[in-house]
Image 1: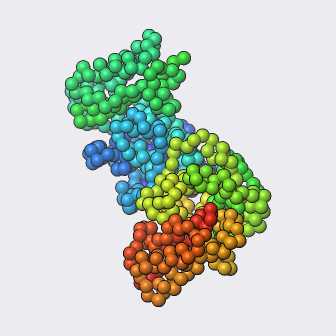
Image 2 (image 1 turned 90 degrees about the vertical axis):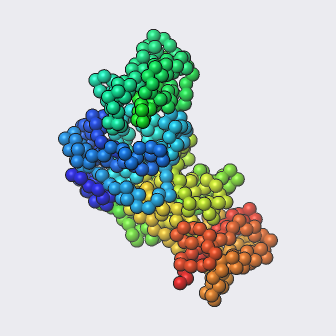
Image 3 (image 1 turned 30 degrees about the horizontal axis):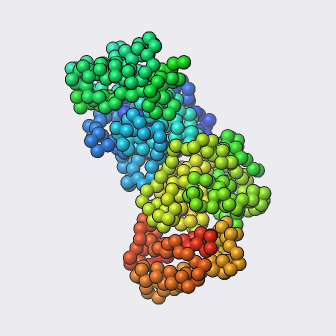
Length: 281
Length: 281
C-alpha cells in the first residue's frame, strides 16, 4: 500500500497498533538499493508490519548539496520495497511534511561536532528533525538504520535516549558490492572511471584494518596511510579521514576500545562516505 | 496513583490506551494552585484518564533563577491533584528525567525571540525539551496549559504542529485571585507589602484595556501608561512591558487583529508575569 498523507497514515497505523501489531520503520530517501532492502527484510523478520518511508528531506541538504538532482524513482522503489516485505510505503510531499517553514528543530549536540557534522553544517539538525517528525507520525516499535551512516545512527540513538522516544533503534551492517563498494543511492552518479576510483574508499579502509591487526595503534599513522592511498588517484578529493571513539565520536590519538574509522571523499562531483568499526583491547 | 518511574508510567498508560481510554495530560512544576486545578478539572471533563506531571525542570531555569528554592510539596500536590480529578501523578526525579547530561534539545525559533525568551535565554529550549520528553513518555490525546504563560502556549503549539506530535494543545484561561492577582506558585514568595504591589500587574493591564476600548491604538502610548502605573511603586522592577501580535509574538506599533499585552516585573526578588489577550477590528 502507498500513502502520501500524514492523517491517513496515522489512522491506518493506529488501527494496526490497536490490533496488537508491532511496527518496524525503515526511513529512507528512496532510490532503494540492497542496503535498504536488507533493512526492510530485517524489519519484516522482527515486526508484524513494516513501514518504509521515502522522503528526500530538503532541510538536511545544504545550499550546494544535491537535493534537486537526488535520484528519485517512486514506482521502482514501491515494487522493490513491497517485494522485500514492506506493508506500507509512506511517501509524503515536501508540502505535506513542511506545510510552512518550520520554526521547530531537534538538535543533538557534541556528537554532531565531528565528521559529517563538521563538513555539512545543519545536516544533522535536518536529519534529527525529520526523523522526530516520522517517529511522531508512525507509532513504530523499532526503526532500522544502516551503519554506512554511522554518525547518523549514533546521533539518532542519542536523541531517542535523551528525548525518551518510545522506539528501539536497530543499527544494521553496511551492504557492499562484491568488489567492496558500499551501496549508496549516490553511486548512480558515478561514471565507470569514477566507479573504479570509488573502490579506493573500501580498499583504503581494508588496508587500515590490516595495519591495525598487525599492531599499529597510532591514529595519525593510520589516517595518513589512508590519505596516501586515496591521494594516489586524482579523481579523489578527500573531505575527511578520521578515527574517532565509537561512543563519543571524538578524535582518537591512540586506538582503544571500540572506534570508528570514517571517511568522506568526493569522486568527481559525487560525495561518498564509508567506514569500518573495530575494537582493540 | 503516584508513579516516579518512566517505565512503569509508560506500561500503565499503554495498557489504558489499549483499553481505548483517552488521556489528558497536565504538565506542572507542582505547588499546585487553583490555576493548575482548573486545568485538571477541564482535562477530566474531556478525557477518561488524567495524568498530572509534577517536575521542577532544572534545564528551564537560568543560573540565577530560583530552581533550588522553587516551592515543592508533593504530599499537598498529590491530594489536590487527586481531588481535582487526576488519576495518575507522575513525579520523576531529576535523575530519572536526566540520567546523564542531555545532548538533545528541541528548539522553537522566532516565537522565542521576544518577551520571556529575550530576558531568559535558554528558558524555552528547556521547556520545549522537557515537554517533548513528557509527550514521548505519556501517550496523551490532549495536553492542558494555562494562558498565564501565553508565550509558552504559543511556543508549544508551534512545536506540536511543526514536529507532528499527535496531541492536541488546549490553552486554558488565567485564573486570578478576587483582587485580580494572577495565580502563580511563585506568589508564596511575596510578603504582604509585596503582595499589595503585585496587584499593580493586573491593575495596569486593566487600565490598558480601558484605554484601548476608548479607542487608543498606539502601542507605545499604551505601554508607556502601563510602565507609568508600575513605576509609581518602588517595589516594582520592570523586566518588560510589550504589546505583540498574538500569532507571531512580534512587537506591534499599531494595534490590530488579535494581540497580547504581556509584562514581567520583579516585585522584590520575585519575578511575576501577567498578560491579557485582546482583539480589535
